[in-house]
Figure (cartoon, rainbow, N blue to C red):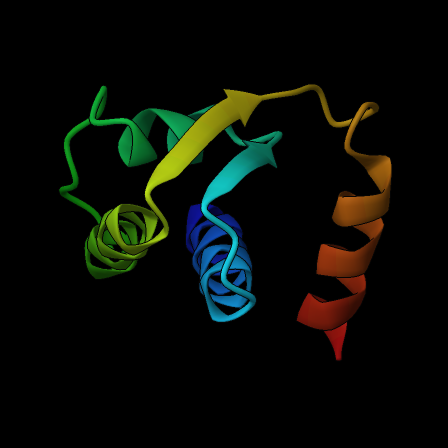
Length: 87
């Protein structure tokens, strides 16, 4: 599931970058994703290349603040991600 969460983070960052946003607040209910994106975790799993892309795109944006939030606070994103994963 971390890979799916990582893909969602990467795609969100790419979308924000394509729109030209100079500052972004990126939230996820996956603590593993947030810790990996801010460099607090080592990338030794199947999502390592995706996390590297997240970091690369975040440097292109300029200022990205990664925040962990509860699943309840991020319910809309969770429902969308689940729907996308199932389809």
